[in-house]
Length: 338
Image (cartoon, rainbow, N blue to C red; front, side):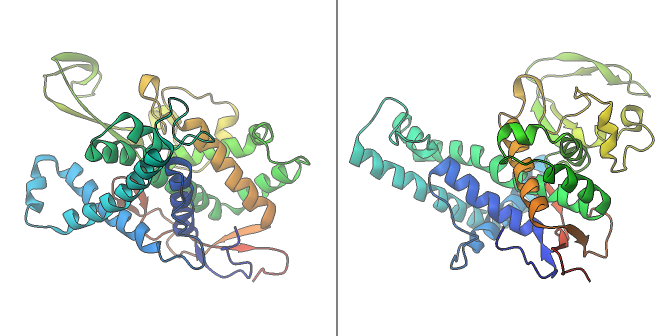
């Protein structure tokens, strides 16, 4: 919060939020923050390394078998090696703690909190397997989380009346921002639902068909007939397209209208966190953190102003989808309005 300018100058809040959640995710998952938001930090290069590596990974996923076109490009391998080196550093520290304190059954080496590397080195020996598990947990916690919050700011900056309505709701709370207090912010929940619906950082899902099957719809000229899926077929589900389907959401499907949630319930038409047995395990944490960060900004700043001449959301695809232009805004307190 202290790193956001109070004088009404322009700031890329997407970059700040990504740094914030890089620090938060490394501390909560790995037991030690990367500290990228500290004034004396030299680790901002870490964020750029992760972003560049994800960009290369995203291209390879999109190309599928054609990823062989990148065979001669070794830049991704160098970036991946640097990311692995960072994660391996956390693994090595966990192994040193294990040697120092010995193996404990529960709740792990660190009895005060759950630290993922400590738990993994207690259960596994292979560094590559431990690293893969850590990256699998870390990527959605860091990347999707920060981008989703910046998407909220992108939309709200272009609809300042939404900021004012949320701010009035937040300022009406006279108690600390507890979990129960955040749950009571009904209009903010509408805003978060609408933002996550329109700007999903992870808007597709990929599955491999393990046996021949027939899906009830998807075939025929209108896509309403059954369709045969042979074993070995890669099935790509585009949730982002469904979230803007006028047959589901109406003619204003592409408009930012938080008020639509006054009469709408969550269901299979709303999948920013997927659903069923593969629902995102961090859904409640993500919603709570989003509400808290937004509430603190609303308490601190009277208004928000868009400072990007481009009003549309220009997508940049990495492993996730984010704004290519960042989210350039200005925050105003009393006396900083232009």
